[in-house]
Length: 431
Ligand SMILES: C[S@@+](CC[C@H](N)C(=O)[O-])C[C@H]1O[C@@H](n2cnc3c(N)ncnc32)[C@H](O)[C@@H]1O
Picture 1 (cartoon, helix red, strand yellow):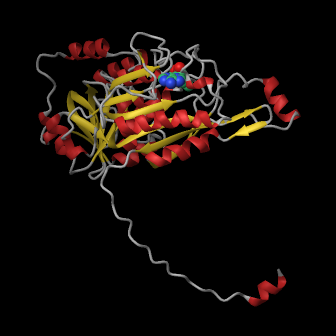
Picture 2 (cartoon, helix red, strand yellow; picture 1 turned 90 degrees about the vertical axis):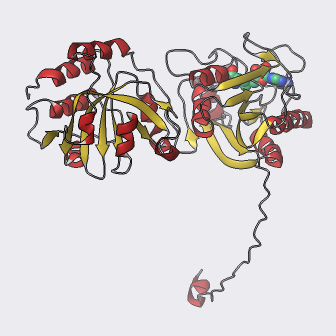
Picture 3 (tube, helix red, strand yellow; picture 1 turned 45 degrees about the horizontal axis):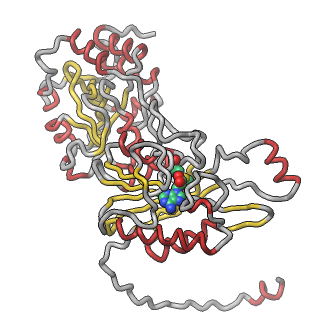
């Protein structure tokens, strides 16, 4: 194995023993000067999950895809967050991390090919062996690749803070280094599947609560449809999963339930929400799907009404109407709901609720969330479903709906151009 000397060797040892993560951020000739001036790396929503996984103390590299050079080594001075400097890059790269150089910044040329050879994909967290190989490239005499110290370029001006000795910098890495907190993945498709209810070191809601929501769902909605400090409302929040996810992500949150389970949940019947019109930036609702679960003994719990009755939909419509009233125009509500199959009878609860939501909101998208962790998720129920010829519920719907922004855009009158094709007689005869 190649001998790696000096600073890189020590960084490598730290990356192996202290769980220091490593990430490559990407820039272009156009965006590079702002990285330098602001001491900030940023990326778009597309690569947000890696940026958000960055923790203070992690090692960073910057790949300029226009000039095909890799700059390094940097250290994250903050955790990855959205909008550290909202005005940077005109808001194009809002998932950001503050950085500082570790020693003189060095540059490796022909970087894309080098990374490809090492099996490194940009925007994906670097594994420990990848980090070691990269650090090796930056080590003195560590690489036969063209490498230059860039005192003559603007990066050369990024000298490390004067008060810090090399040992001081290494200690700083150790001191700020916290074990990596797991963050969910930003979903890219309409199929969401979560084997666990929660993520990270702190619980989100209570996974023993009947019908508790997977915290990953709320996290994904927050990333896509809110900004830090936005106000989120969950009017039926059960064990408080929405509160915990919002708090960790720096969103303000109001949560109600007919039977509060903790002091930060306010008691309220969601058919009347005590908030002004057009007040909140996002809503999440995981409502009862019928009377299949006993949530509490409160007679006003909608979970006491069977979804086989019209009453159930009439009461949910009151909630939906209130949600529409308090949500700001143009903002999003996520509504999680499942169908019912009880005593040989299927009830399309999801379709019914979607139809009501459609009276008030525009559809952004419909997500299929795989159902796990329910009481029928046992071998005995699987064998019953096969023997008695029925299906267990395998998914829920997450309806993502938007309150119309108020400006009614006249639908353009469409003229339909009909094309006529002569029928191929020989094919028609043979069919
Ligand atoms: C599926 S649970 C919500 C689970 C929650 N998201 C969590 O992660 O713990 C549905 C909740 O709706 C509440 N609920 C039912 N009827 C209500 C009403 N009229 N007003 C407010 N909350 C109500 C129930 O008490 C229950 O906690």
